[in-house]
Image (cartoon, rainbow, N blue to C red; front, side, top):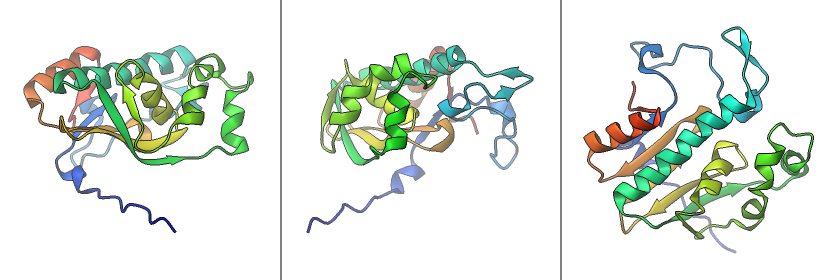
Length: 186
C-alpha cells in the first residue's frame, strides 16, 4: 500500500500573496470587505450592479497566467513540477467540458492536460498556462514547483495565489503590479 506524502504547509509563513484584490478593500485585520467574484462559476452573477462576464473572467485569469510565467522567467525556470495533486474526474467535472458550460471553448484547450496530468509531471514554461488555468478553474489543485531554482507556486481558495522564491521582492512586486495584480496587498 502506497502512503501519501504528508503536506507541509509551513511555506505559508514566507509566501508572497499575489491577487486581483485591491489593497484598499482590506480592513485592519486583513479581511477583504468588497463583494467580488471568486471563481469561474461566478460568471453571470451580479457584482457592483452588473453581470460579471466571461470576458472579465478571462482577462483576470490571463493576468495570473502572466504572473506565473514572469515569476518563472525571473527565477530562471524552464519548467515546473506538479506536486500534491488533487484532481477529480467525476461526471460533474466532465460536464464542464460540454458545450453547455460558459467556458466550453476555453476548456476544450485544457482537456488533454486535464486527463493526463499526474504528480511529478514536469510542465514546460510553454505549457504552464494550462496547469495554471486548471488550478484557477478548480479542475484540480496542486503545487507547481522547481526546487532547484527555489520557485514555488501554490493556489488557494477565492483566487489567492502564492509564490515562494528567492526573487528580489522589489523586482517581483514591480513586475506583478505591471501585469495588473497586487503583491502582498494586506
